[in-house]
Image 1 (cartoon, protein in one colour):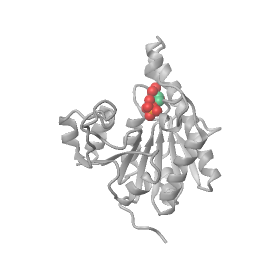
Image 2 (cartoon, protein in one colour; image 1 turned 60 degrees about the vertical axis):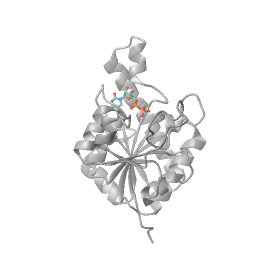
Image 3 (tube, helix red, strand yellow; image 1 turned 45 degrees about the vertical axis):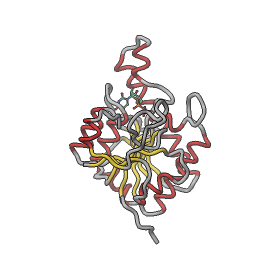
Image 4 (spheres, helix red, strand yellow; image 1 turned 180 degrees about the horizontal axis):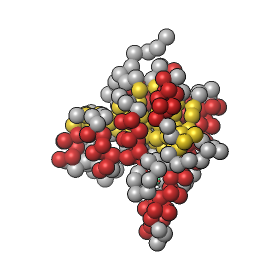
Length: 239
Ligand code: UDP
């Protein structure tokens, strides 16, 4: 039996930092298990889940550029970091008995399938979690943009952006105690108020494809389940 849900197919964007927990870098096992357990909960409710994972917990192209590396080379390294995270996620899912597949935008056939849209859609329909690795496969982009791209390609009902902050606020809640969370906000309002939801390319693509975004904190127990049930959790950015 399936529980009623607001969204049937979702694209979850996990930043690399979300996998660090309280560690200074890398992948924290308890944290990744907490996240995959939340995904299992919604998969068990019948929700089809695609995941785009970042790599900032391991390597970021822009930081390496600042240390005078060639940017494109550094970005390919960043994309490889996302593949490491994707493999760790797949492993965690398997330990929970959840079927998961990794599809990489860069060919690495010994360790992951190469991205193929029809196959990815087939997996989603079969109830498998699809983890999209290596971002867009191109330097100078981010995994936020990859999430918007895969979310649009997979015809997802919504993009769920998991962050450290539980929504979009009127100001930075860490600096301004009077900052209030928006329950929902339109793309235009967010743009006019200069609120940072995702990077500009990702935001523009979601807006153009009418792919609504929910910004929420995955560290909060049960948050993902509440988001897909349509409860007041995080901030809905909509058309
Ligand atoms: N990256 C890239 N192209 C993409 C996606 C990511 O070059 O389409 C590289 C880029 O260097 C980036 C790194 O991969 O810094 C990790 O991705 P991101 O910073 O988006 O990860 P997150 O901040 O979500 O952890």
